Each structure stands twice: as structure tokens, then as C-alpha cells.
Length: 294
Image (cartoon, rainbow, N blue to C red; front, side):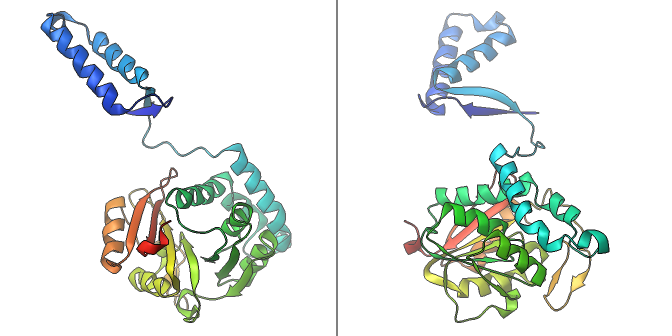
């Protein structure tokens, strides 16, 4: 267990709390009270100091997973209601993907991750509203569906390497323009204001080439948004290799938050790079020109 500080109210800062603690400690020391003071006195002093500034000290578990909200659960249920009819017959044949697989894959946690990604994009002022947006590896249209609800005026595009996935994505986001394409086959003449590659890069044989290729289809003032798992927590094996897509079914690339930033900074030193970690633990990155930041 570790200790964290949670903001309870907008009435001060951590610096104020620490200064208060130091003042109280100095007074206690000068008055000779600290020599025989119990440990609980210091604990109470620190807690009250942070409380005065709107913070509460809490115990946190580093291994604890993010808890999806009730809205995430509703979004998952709504998505499944749209896409399951496409694969309902697979329940009898066993052909992939089965309804049972999709119900497990598109649970509230996955919808939470997609929502938190868009929250982070908004916080980083990535320009999406009213723009041309491409989701590469769109699968069943999870991210596209959330984007349509959040950015109703955006022109949404999605691509994948599976006709079944594209059929599901069409039901999830009917007005999105969808097309079949591998990463290496993306039209060079295309230009998008925002390009998303969510949980794909860890599968690829040459992630550096993939990132460079995607930057080529981002408009001059656009942004490339990437997510990958935290490599320190990711234990998915490589599984089978798909030569036609130059990727593995499982994961072969693993980045820590630190190596993730170095990896991208080396590829595109001329770009404005913002990296971080979503509450779900996934690593985030946005690469853009300076003009792309509002």
C-alpha cells in the first residue's frame, strides 16, 4: 500500500499545506514538545494541514484497476446491442468472433479506456470537433461511436483488416466512412486532422516505421494520437505471426512510460510531443505541430 493525496475542495494547494506543517513543526520544536510526542501527533498534524488546504490523505493500491463508471457500463451494453447481430450465427459455428468473445472484450473497462482517451485529448486541447478524424484498427467501432456522441460535427473515418469488424463498426457508427486497409496500405494522398491508433502499435514488427507512416497522413496542423499498454504490466504473449500485415496476434513491443517518450521523441523530434498515462494504466501520446495546439 502507498499513500496518495486526494483533492477534496478548491481551497489551497499542496505547497500551502507543506508550509503549514513546517510552521507547526518549528513551533513544536521550539517549545520542546517534539522530543516526547507520540507518532500519532505528527500524523494528525499532517492530516489536518492537508485538510485545511482542501486535500485528504488516502491509501492507494498501485495494483488496483480503474473502476469503470455506470455510464461506461451503459455504453458497453449499447455497443454490444448494435454489433452482436452481425456475429450471432457464430454462436453455433464457433467461428471468430463469437458473441461470447465480444461480450468479454467490449466490457465496461474497455469502454472506459476509450472514454478516458477522449477526455485526455480534450484536456490536451487536441482539435477533434468539426475535423476529419481517422481511427485505424477501428474494430467494432467502439471509439468511433463515442466520438460521434462527443463530436457530432466531425467527419469520422475508420479502417481495419477484417470485413466482419467493419460490418460491426458500420452498425456502431452508421455515418462513419469505413474502408479495408492495413497500416502499410493507407492511401498516401489522404490527410486527416486527427489520427488515432489505439492498442495496435504493440502488435507490429516495425513500430518506428508505422509511426512515421502515420505522421505522413496527418494534416499540417493535425495530431497523431497513440495508446499502448504499460509494458511493465503487459504479459500478453506474441501468439501467431501474420506476415500479410507484418504484425502478431499478441504483443511483441513493450514500453515503460519513460521509454515510450524517448521512443517517440527520437522518431519525430520536430513535433510537439505530449505523453502520459491514462487512469487505466495505458500509455498515451499526442504528436502534433505547434499550430495544432489551440
